[in-house]
Length: 344
Image (cartoon, rainbow, N blue to C red; front, side, top):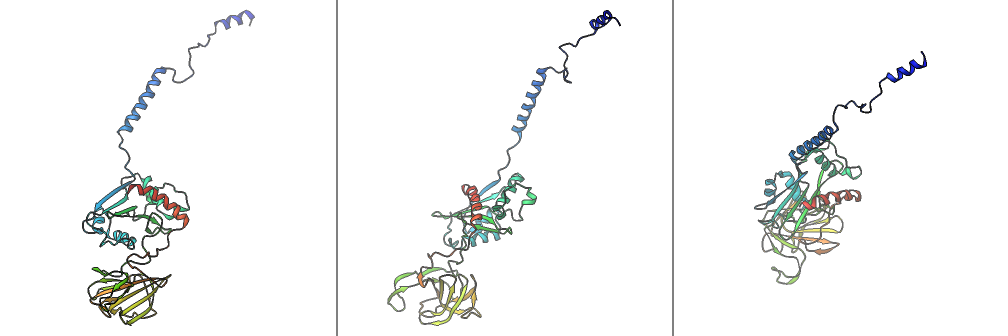
């Protein structure tokens, strides 16, 4: 082809217009795209506004004591076994029959059944002692849930003058325990009271006029009046060092407890079957029955607590506590306390 023909063909070929777009959406105006994005954002905002907020992970329930702690706890959905466990946990610091009066308040923190599954799962992990050595990670409620997830996570009992707090914690086996905010068990190795008494008929005193001998002398224990035949319980585990008759004491039992503690139970009407010197007793075991033997003007229990052979007031002496958690567990437990204590 000649040079002239070639030039003529190139002159006739169409050129690409600058208005041609290579995008598949070249037929959609730019302003339409912007308007569509705005509409989508507005729709999302409207949907979020119409969605109800998630239920809180926990709920707080409060009740006034009218007759007993167990009755108030039952009103809030706490079963009898859990109420009894809480009562035992505070047995050394609170006398439920005397310290709780009408108007006393109990408050519980529970998991909220309507809370999102991941929130409940997080709490399940936090109340498990295994979390002390493993990262806390949210898992499904079906894998983290415990069969007794309805247990209260925290409890406060207010008597008007003082308040007592307990917090739930689980050991490596998943067994539930209640501890004070310091990580120590509130349930002592000793119980404060050895029987269900009606009144304190004679207090601990370094100098008292004895109603029988009419002489001034130290009263190294406390007299707890109760009907004859009322069961008397060992206040701690130990070994019976004496079970027999002593002048003044009448029928008396002496027990060497652990550490520096020892206890004496006097004026008994009779001993429990098979009780003798050398026998091992456990806390709460019936060891005898109220009487008025020896120098006594009526049926009552004379009860003594000695620490390193020194008599102490049984109603106020500091009672040894059970072993608490390890340092690592306490650190993790403190996080739970910081979370739940403000709710009480």
